[in-house]
Length: 504
Image (cartoon, rainbow, N blue to C red; front, side, top):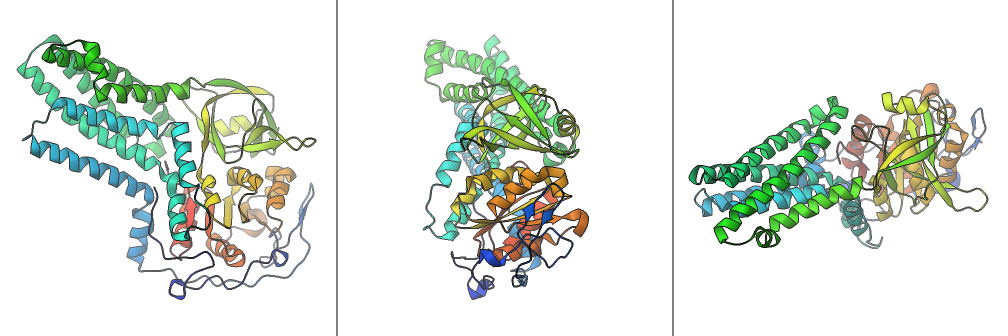
């Protein structure tokens, strides 16, 4: 997840060979918030119920967007096709494939089925671990604990921990390959020894292969984007069916081994790595679903396009996300949480999420202003913006409701940051409270009203803030198209940039 190669950067700026882009130090008093129709005006403003007022201040020096580094082909290969997610997937799958081929060659095409089964179970366990909240949070903590004194070249790679999804898919795909080999061996064993336990072992093996192939096929990015809700339900129920079948298979496989060893089933199981791998896999699934709760939600309708859902059952520190649903067996929706502060005590009193109209489920939440209950599952999970603490200063870019996840970062006030928020009628859509929170975090925030000004050249605007603030990195929360555009536009100019990709 962690290491796209980029140009060498130090904490102060770029070397001449990497295009000298940081020309002046950041002076907060000279930067302003863009909200008017005048594209050159950036003024820090006050929020009223009707408009964002902008007192005039000096316009900062306009940054010149430098040329992209490298050739067109090298840029695409380096920053698009060779993403950190794909690198991790490729590394895990290639390592497994190398061992797989070595096993086949060493055993002349017939390795021991128990060893192959252990390899399949180990990969399945790793795949499930990288969907377990505490395990993922531990990796975030490990990768973000380094001090700012470490070289930027190291910190910018550690920040790619959010691509841990490559571990999930890489290990999962490798598990299917291993299990396909195991099933072939189990079939050969049944042909050679037609016992009831070898028959059940063979049948359950083929059922598992079928279920795994169904899961892999439905998880293909093109299919998943087109049929996301169906994929989620299919993935879940296929996974549960596979896990139950795995247990049945493991017991009958143990019986075969016990018969061969002239021992007991219990003795064989406790000595089998396969058994313990499946135990851990099962525990990870149970740990998440055992925390399924029906929680009261207090809606705060911001507009016909957005709402803010408040929860009071617990406090929530910054940089966490949570899954919500009203149909827990079929669909879940992940949201970044925002700590809610008690105005009198100043302490955290619950949390909230910002929901923007992006489909049937979100529209239903916006149009339901009454107090109600939603399902919450699992433990709070760290996300992309948690890695921002690795940097001395950053630029945060958001479009539309992407400002929701950013509010948690802005509340934390850990890393100096500049904010660029592009949205349709931000004040009317998200309300003065949200706009005030953005401006409180960055008094000079650039709030771009696309209704009045049209869509910004978001790469140029982002680079302008990088130039003004001497930022070490850019973080963007937006739709996939804009995210890819900004990340690519910054990385190809030597600026570390991060945005969540599909299934990061």
